Image 1 (tube, rainbow, N blue to C red):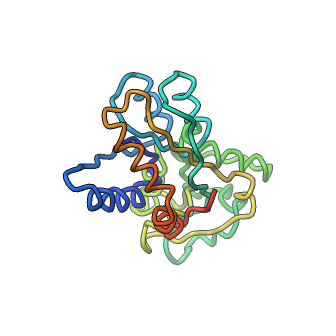
Image 2: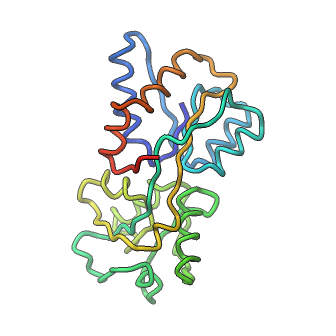
Length: 219
């Protein structure tokens, strides 16, 4: 199963549940930037399910005719600024990230978290030159965890999953850049029946509990 990097913790939990409910079934995930996962799928990589962090990256796969059925939005996610604990740089807003001397990391613009960050910056009328563009949201978060960057624009769910290694700063412009997450069974799924069952788990009350517990928003 191919899934956006921001789903790593939630889907790992749901994968274990699925294996408990379906003895003998092994769930294997490939997590990463939604754009690179979509490129792998259209390039012929075998997978059963694709869960993307944006409709735009899902469209790469649907336009190529590689899906079975219609993608369904199962959660939404909102951005937050990840900072080092204690907020030594006094970051309280998106505008603060444009201050000179700050090392800020963004996701690459082709990745949903990067596209959303750019949308939020545009909404605020701000320009920001990061020290690096990362290939997925976990890579951006790691830079702050390792203190290689002062701040990164990531998802609320990633700040929560960092378990105290970073702090989160909310900013109002994030409301202009909330990402829908669609999920779908792939056309040539080697395990079509299990794929449908996993999607059903993700969309069930139990799946919703795990996802909202991780900080995802209801669709």
